Image (tube, rainbow, N blue to C red; front, side, top):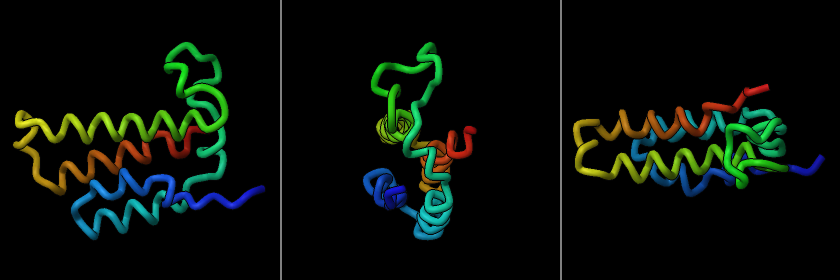
Length: 102
C-alpha cells in the first residue's frame, strides 16, 4: 500500500483554522484516519452524492468540498455571530465527519 500524507491532503482546509490548538487537534485526528477514507467513494450506491464524490477517492473529495462550502458560508456577515474558535470547530468537524464511516 502506498503512503498517504493524510494531513497534507487537507493542507488548504487546515490553513483556514485560526486556533493553533484546534489546528493541532485536527492534524492529529486527520493523521489517525483510516487509509480507506482516502481511497473509497463517498457512496456505494451513487444515490446521495454528486458524480465528483463517486469512484476512488470520492469520500475525501466529498469531505473537502463540504469544508470549502462551510468556509465560504462562515465568511458571510450573517455568520459573524460565531467566534473564531466556533468556526474552527465547525470546519474540523466537517473534516472528520465521515472519517470512520466504515
